[in-house]
Length: 352
Ligand code: NAP
Ligand code: ZN
Ligand code: ZN
Image (cartoon, rainbow, N blue to C red; front, side, top):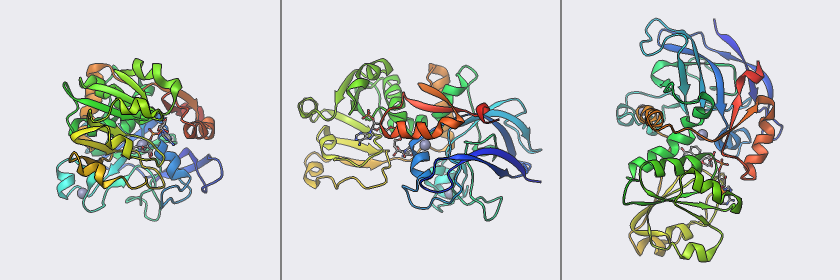
């Protein structure tokens, strides 16, 4: 028998999110049932809730930075037991057979077979889409459930499941480390984790922000330098000096100033996913210097676990503002004003 859970949903693209009840599948042999304690608020939740990207199915229950307590495990589950702390990120299943899935890169599933935590067709409940972490419980196959180091504060660890892995993965892939100069663009949920990881990996870390009020925080979070990206003189002073820049900005903007900051063979990685495209970058700006513009999507299950373990070893968590479920609509408005310090996390017990 499927069970019910309390949730908060968007019912269309303009009305504020409000309370509802959703159905969760009855756990099967490989399933883990989790009572959700905390869920981070990602800008992707807002893009989806408001249909800024195509394909939102309503009602939509967002949330893919999920941390909670295991309340039930199926007979075949080996990694988890009742009472464990467990986490779920942006994916709850994939095709598991293609080259990407076999390589542990489920986010690049070649069959478009991955199931996102919310707003994907639900394989188990035909006709329904998946519902995310703005809810009291979730049931997920154990291969897509992650272990959270016990030393990490659970509320502050929840956003590692998206903001953390989305910045960790490109920084690792493009070799951020000692001797490298790495830029992070935008100090929001993703950006503040990008600064922490680039610093922890030993790179010379430079934050680019549009908000003069975030300079001190940028340094406290680990940036060696902070540059106001709207100041052309300050930008010129950094020209041609970066190995890697990870751009987390959620709105369309001119990429050419950032391409101009790259060294020969440098890479600008886009992880921000604005609803409207960026203006096309200058081809000349890329040809002269053999520069690359790349993209990166979250991270696969093995790398997400590696990231959580790295955070456990180095005591890294997110800087959060804990909110009640009923404050979600105000949180979205503040996120649109770049006024997040630096991730909202919902205390799901406020919904019970
Ligand atoms: P966020 O917390 O709202 O942070 C975005 C930051 O971008 C803001 O704090 C602001 O930083 C900067 N910014 C916003 N509007 C700007 C503008 N018009 N011009 C210049 N800078 C601006 O958002 P987030 O949760 O970190 O997500 C960022 C983006 O990444 C979203 O589009 C989200 O959907 C996407 N995302 C992608 C992936 C992936 O796998 N690739 C995963 C998760 C999220 P400053 O005040 O410092 O300028
Ligand atoms: Zn996200
Ligand atoms: Zn696959």
